[in-house]
Amino acid sequence: MVKKYDLGKSSDMRKFSRDLDRDIKEQAKKSMMSQKHEIECPHCQEEVSVPAGKSLCPSCGEEINLTLNFDF
Image (tube, rainbow, N blue to C red; front, side, top):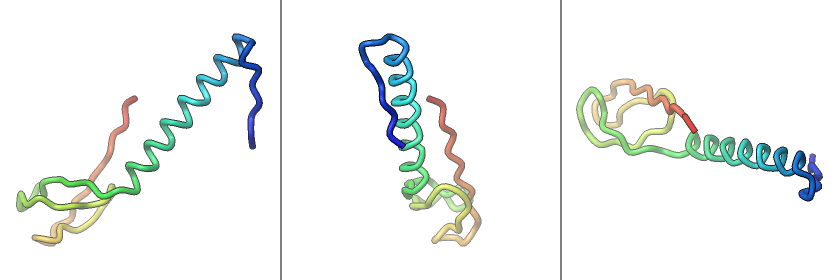
């Protein structure tokens, strides 16, 4: 649903700014959660590329639980 703002009004400008900030953060989180990340395996210390969440290390086969903490 498309929201309409009257940017001449300060209250609508605040709403627009808040909504824009929220939408940008949601898109950033979604993008980071769908990508693979280069990390060092905590078990074998090999550099591996894994998605967020639980996955297996391709080198040693141990489970890696990559948690992304967003603080913005």
